[in-house]
Length: 232
Length: 246
Image (cartoon, rainbow over all chains, first blue to last red; front, side, top):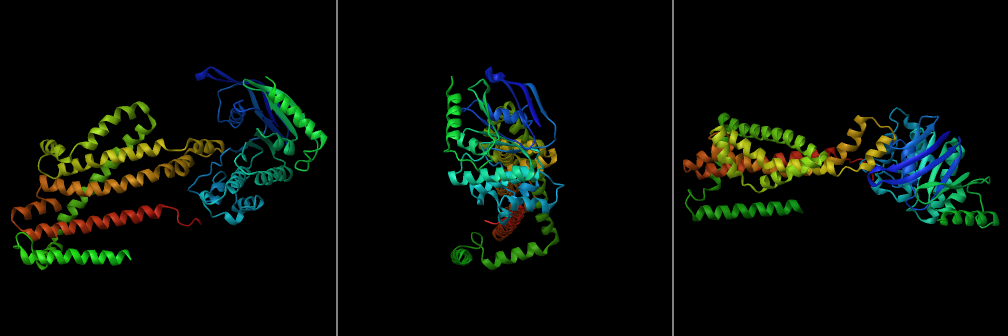
């Protein structure tokens, strides 16, 4: 379980209050998606949770050890093959396990390829495989499929849903795409404009990726999210 | 195809040389056979072979000193902005200073013993090494370092798997350029400051009016440094990843 309590982040050099007072919980095996306008501090929040930024006020408590991160860009090492990129984050791990994960995300036939020879979707699959092989208990995703086309993005969302179902990994996913959140999330937090607070919180019980976004319930939900986002 | 052109080019040079040797006196253009004989003499004489080794050892010393200095200075310039700014004008001056100008000072400091040749050679290649290391450090992608820290890679792994491969393309191109420059300046330095080594022997042959000796030593130098260049290129390419599919 991840607990964020009264989180406050100030960029001292610009005297900028990025996050005002943020508190939320991500339960085990839950998919939480955070939506917010550009520049509201979504990536800052993930950097704090992943321990890349220790300059904040408040508390971030995670009762397990490993947090994996799927960045906006794949951040694969260009000089290492797909398999080497994945195995780098867990050198003691067994090769068989790495190959199994590569197979699960459907890039096993490309294990000896360098990232430059893969498509954007394949590179992000590799990036997901790396986070899984790391042994993550919590997976942070920072708009990882932003640059992918609609079909491919849907395919990747299905993959995330499957990973969550098969492994029970908790997922904290930051996005600005409302449809993406409505399709995948168990819970949606809507952040306000900077300085950000949680402006609204929605719970969805339908099975991820098996939702009809044109049904009245989801159309209404979408409108409520839009209204919250547009609030001054 | 390239091989064919190389052979044709070689034959053209030999023909021009042969015609030149028929027209001019042996003092101006010695015959091919005279130069060939001179090369054989040099290669069969243990003393003259030692002279080649002497130049090679000076070259090796030059590369060691220049790389030790270049890596340390380049690293600090890469990580410290103030040091980088202070260094910039010094590097600019070094890059445009003719080695011969430094040679006179080096002779005054070290005397006529081959050390000035090493000194000017080091100074000739130092800016290239410093700049290549500095650029390599500056071009490390911080996002990759952050990725390494996120996945809790050890410091050793971040250095070995991220930092070294990030800076190595800059360093290898710096090495390729500086090797050629070091070869040329070391022989030039020897010609002007000592009677030992390849350059010293070229100088001596010139003083004894042995044109064939000058050309023989020059050919040996070109072949030797050409071989070193090829060996270094092969070694550097070996370090690159070849097993990855495209």
